[in-house]
Length: 236
Image 1 (cartoon, rainbow, N blue to C red):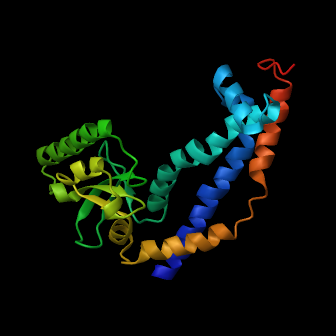
Image 2 (image 1 turned 90 degrees about the horizontal axis):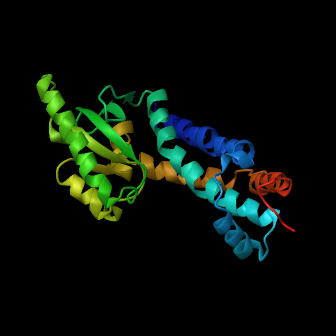
């Protein structure tokens, strides 16, 4: 598969599996009141600052907007990309506990065991030691089973961003195990040195031409109708 073909397939994957799925789940699952755990005090306050009123629309926006603009799509992003690498035969699901994928590194032609992270600031200080311990256990397991593996074969792959943007938490891990980010990571997994920058350009064009079908408004309006008749709220 040449670079242009792969770019088209990956761009379409983002559209169908990430963006379209986000729209569908926003209109089906997240527009239902039962999908929320509600703090009645906080949600009343959020309704007031959003709509200057305690109202079904205000409550709906307070619940719905953070979900679909934040947690919903960010949570699924990494998993979707992991699945994409496997489905496109760019990688395999890892058989080693703690690793997400395995692939042949197109830069050094060695097999890599990789845990995926989304971006350069997506781990906290408390994540560093567990990640290092996990990688160390994999190293010890490999030695026990006579697998030809060194520390540079265990990598943390960061899907977007640049090396200069990596947080200090990632830099601590990089002292022992390579943290490969953005352009370099996509090169190693696809074999095309400027694949990432071209993918970003393709995605920019695709996103600007998306038909959103006003799904954000449709979603919170559907939720507001359910809130209006719910016994959980009293708007009198």
